[in-house]
Each structure stands twice: as structure tokens, then as C-alpha cells.
Image (cartoon, rainbow over all chains, first blue to last red; front, side, top):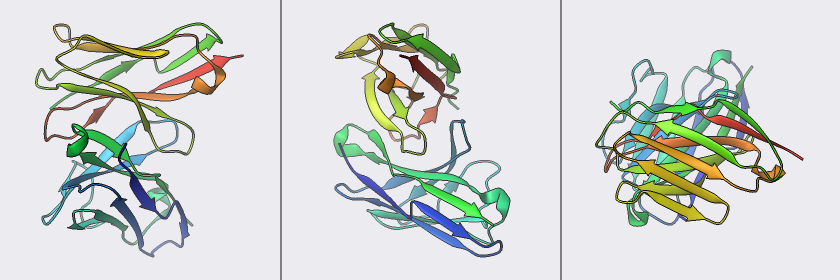
Length: 116
Length: 111
């Protein structure tokens, strides 16, 4: 199947700093990528849909200025958690839909963010 | 929008027994139904999927059934093994749209 790579896999930062997470589709072009947040033992909560060359579409309740998303190319989307606080600590996962594989959704490895 | 419900939330079976997880969806436009397996701290992995033009699909010990009329689909795992223990998510999607996920089922296979 298609490969989606996410980096970093783990990051620890101080409260008030910003953290950037990258999501790359390695062997296909993704005009759309999705960013999820997952709490322990819970389902995937869609945060936003990242669209190449345009603004991201955020889900209700997700702060646009808090979670900045940039989809500058067909293979890269970034999520920046700005002015991070301990409550932002979570597992963040990106995914991309491979239209060449009949629209299957492939996930990145996930990024474990811990804000001290 | 689409609403996907998944049951049960937890499931324990003896090794060798079968496990069944059920999902329902609300949007008749949904036509793609994947199942993902997620081990602790890892990414969800696609294990099987079904499209609305078929009623059943099987891959070795794993099968999925779809009832479009009733808007429900199920995952069946036969001859379960300890390595099947994980969290399983169902999802529903339509062309060009996002995926809507169920709440997950934590499966434990007891040796």
C-alpha cells in the first residue's frame, strides 16, 4: 500500500513553545490530508482537512490559530501547535487518501506530543 | 453528516474462537467501508475494506459483510490468535469526502 510518513514520532516541549509536525506522502500525491487527534483508548477525532494550495477546513471546536495547518505541496502537510499547553499533550496522526488506490486512507506513524 | 456507531466497545474471546464487531452508518451516500487495526502507540493499519457494490469480502481469517439496506457492516475474525489483540475501528466514506470513524473496539484474545 501507499506510504505516509510522519515526523517527529515523539516530541517533548515546554509550555508556551510551538511544535511543528510533518506529514509526507512518500509514493503518491495527496491533494487532501487529514489531521486527527487521539486520546488514550479513544477513537480518532478529526481536527482538520488539509487541502493543497488552499486553506485547511477545521472541524467545529478546533481552534484555527492554535493548530496551524499548511499544505504547501502535493506530498507535504504540516501541523503546528502554537503556544502549546499541557492540555495539548496527545497523539496526533495524519492521513492521506490515495486516489490511485481507489481512495484508500493511509496513516502516518503518529506523533506523541508531551507539553511540560 | 455521516454518523458511524460501533459495538461492542470491548470484546474478550478465547483463542481459537470467533470475534464479531458491528458498525452502523447513517448516510446512504457512503460507499466505502474500511476496517483498521491499531496496536498501542502505533498507526491504524487497513486490514480489510468493502465497497457498496458487494455484500461480503474475505481475506483468510478476516471477513467483512455489508448490508446496504440496513446500513450496517460487520467484521468477522475466525480462529482468533493472541496477536489479533488490538483496537479495531470501522469507518465510512464517500468519494471525495472525509472518513468517519467508529468509536473503536478493544479486542482481547485470551490464550
